Length: 155
Image (cartoon, rainbow, N blue to C red; front, side):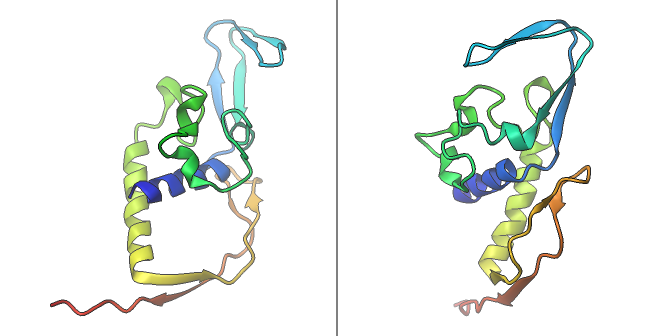
């Protein structure tokens, strides 16, 4: 289940379930980048963090465009290496989704059943993401071929 959990996290990093996080600045603050640029954010402004860009940052993600679930495993922990907002598929900080653990449990129950009981093969090309909707999803049809696995007889 740990491997499946890391796989799901990596899919959500590469294909986030929302386009961006929006927050309202309750007080003015300053942001200083690693390059030394300084940005002042006045109180009352809306701050947007586009997840598709946020999740592709080379710090903390090594080779961010590559699907690599082990980036969340022991010894690397890239999801927390850059602080509380390194991984934001379910939001972050005090506004993080309270249903994150439940969502992961549901996803893992479904995928563990499918992986245990079916052989699957994608027969369509891997789809691009449709960013023209509120909840991004695959663009076009996704075709999958599947066969039920033969289960050994119970003793």
